[in-house]
Length: 315
Image 1 (cartoon, rainbow, N blue to C red):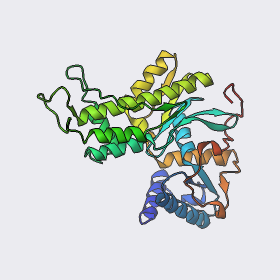
Image 2 (image 1 turned 180 degrees about the horizontal axis):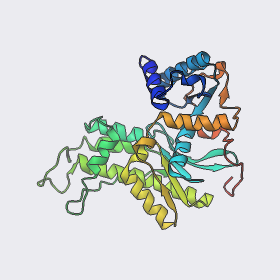
Image 3 (image 1 turned 30 degrees about the vertical axis):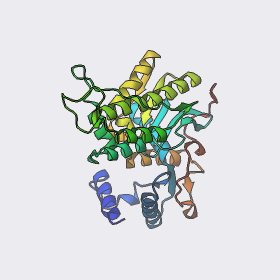
């Protein structure tokens, strides 16, 4: 909250460099994240949105965080009707559009994939700079033909269309306590020993294979031939390559993005808010007393009024 005024001024100055009061002529509404997410950031942004709405006398638009990721991805990649894999620190869902809503075909039944990666990174002492998941990816990239990393078999937990990561995380954490674990290996390490890089490589290969499997099942069920990956974990190049291989085998197209649009950003909230405003979404255009943030706001609760309400065979 201490930085919001300066941030708003900087955003207005960048968007409208030659105008002193752009809010009087260019701003039609204030979009904010209603949920899901962490309580502190949600409340801070909602408070700022309420203040600006009252100050500038423009309506408020409540945006679902997950929907915003999807719509930003569709705009950035020009994907019209893809199966969506939404993977982040707090969410893991496989989604497809049907009959006016984004339907969840599979999801995690415990922790999110990003949470699993971040927690393991802390266990093995990887840095948070720029992010724990990215540093796991860097460790796993040490796998090459000249010096392949060791694949350590981990629990592979797919239950129908859903996935589970908590048991896998406990299992791999326990491996770091075994005598065979050598944090930083070298040429002389024994046959039974494994390193941090080995475990990072094995973890990525296992959990990404799980995600590719349930995504492919959703494609088959829905009759779709394209996949869109959104959310912070969607930046991972190995996940993109594994998904691209599966989609190519099915004669389809992968729609992937870099960190600018995969990770949380204000543009995605504005994009979804603009759709809600343009198409007069009754659920998104909210009154002041309806702006209490919630962490329980599922993707399939939102009526997607800006897309045709067609019913496919997967409805």
